Length: 246
Ligand code: CTP
Image 1 (cartoon, rainbow, N blue to C red):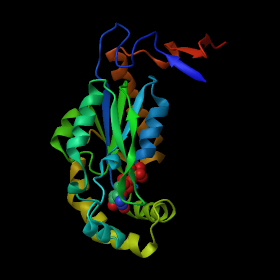
Image 2 (tube, helix red, strand yellow):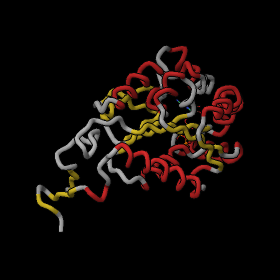
Image 3 (cartoon, helix red, strand yellow):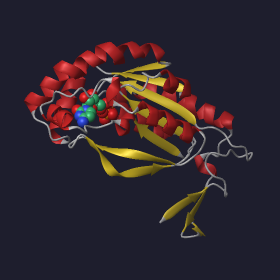
């Protein structure tokens, strides 16, 4: 078991011993645009070790009443409307992460359309990445983002990916996915998501394939982290069961 220690400091302190807020990045984009891929590619290239990836999907309220369950079973529930999300919980969670505090994040199940009874614990970090279809929707959330990235992937490509993903991973059928897409997903993209592109600092065409854009984003973030004085990856001591590795 490899454990990484930052010379006894928690990750939200810099090398000068001052508590520093994490750099918070918001990633927005339509369904299946590759938001998670872009987030993972950024994480791989960061110079700091402590990164927390938070997804708006974790804040789905989920279906509760019998009526809602019936609607979701027939692809008639609007999961793309802002009312489907618990923005209050999201804001308090982001606020705690900014303060370097531990949070318990709900786990959402896309097959049952509901929150699981267990939660996922996340900790303070040097960088917090928050991704989701409506990540630029709420003004309080926007205020908390230090950098806003919009992933702009062609709608046909997104629909093709979504069909595959929903059928293979989310227990749906072709008819149902298309019905939901045309009735709710596509209109919500035009109404809420596409206009929120105006808040973006950077727009990434083609998503995860765009290595040049990702490199530029990473360079900017690494510079910001250097200015905050966070300990960099290469300066960390890696211990093996209490013993330094060779
Ligand atoms: N959704 C659904 N059923 C639910 C809850 C959500 O079908 N019970 C759908 C919504 O219709 C919404 C989508 O999930 O359009 C949001 O997830 P999406 O952004 O597509 O997933 P990510 O994996 O975050 O996307 P990306 O590929 O960009 O990483």
